[in-house]
Picture 1 (cartoon, one colour):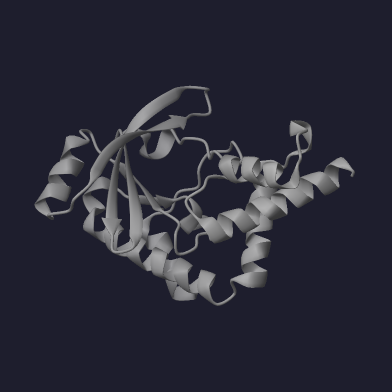
Picture 2 (cartoon, rainbow, N blue to C red):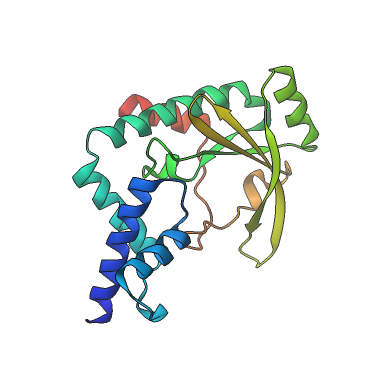
Length: 198
């Protein structure tokens, strides 16, 4: 089988795995798909962008009723959370922003604070329960840095609040793990406009 056909087959299977299983990242889905299809040649495996395109195609074909509604609900929750945490200049990012989220996708919001303990105090003041961990982020200059991540459960939805120093709001944007480019981030006003237009 030609390399492009192998890559396409693995991307399609990885997309199906992502859509049906949930909770997997692209790398895990790619490995699982390659194993299921008996593909051992790593050079033939698709990159993240190919898998993302296959995932969108799968959603358009098989999840036409559920995925758009799940995406809209996720964006509405994102807007509510961003209003609540407006003091930390929240920015929506990830699959909820790019439109490929489904009902299992986590909601990812970047927050900016001189002291991340201020975010904790705000969550405590609102009686929100959270789990604290770190997220490794990569910057265009090659730096790898850990940022505090507050994981909260909002009904059935998982929310990831990642705290960055205030100075990184405009001039230091981490790279998107999917394509290696600076992450797209949206302000509340942009998200509300998207919701109105959809």
